[in-house]
Image (tube, rainbow, N blue to C red; front, top):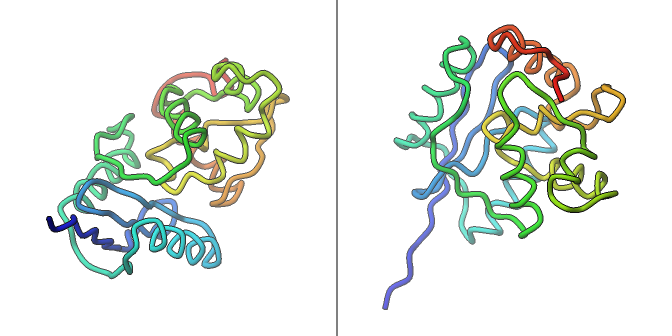
Length: 180
C-alpha cells in the first residue's frame, strides 16, 4: 500500500508589519515566520525533518487562503483565522498552542495564567518554552502572552513586532490591552 507523500511549499508575503515566510502541506499551514534568518533556517530544517521532505517555493491554495486572511487581519477585518494548520509538536506544545488559540483578540494573559489554565501551576517557564516553539505566529497568537507584571518578553519576531501586534489588536478590538 503506498504511503502518503508530504509536500512542503513555501512563499514569502509582504505585510504591513514586515515580510513573512509561510509554508504549507496539503493538510494545513505549518509555518508563518517573521523572525531572524537564523530562526527561519532552524524552523525550515525542523519542518523538513518532521515531514521527511524538502521545502520548495511555490503556490498552494492554502497559502492563498492564509495570505487573504492575513491581509484581513492587518486591516482589522479579521479576528480569528480559519485556515487549517498542520503543526508537528509534542503533546505539551499542542496543549499550549490550543490554549493560545483561545486568548481573545485584543486581550493578553500571562505565562502563569496560561500555566494555571493548563493545570500546571508553576509551569510558566514550560509554557514560555512551548510558546517559543510555535512556528505559526499570529495565527496561533503567541504574541498575546505577557509577563505577570505586564511587560513583554520573548517573542521570536522581536519585541517591537509583538508590541505592534498588541497595539494593532487593541486598536481594532476596542478592548483594554492588558485585560485579564
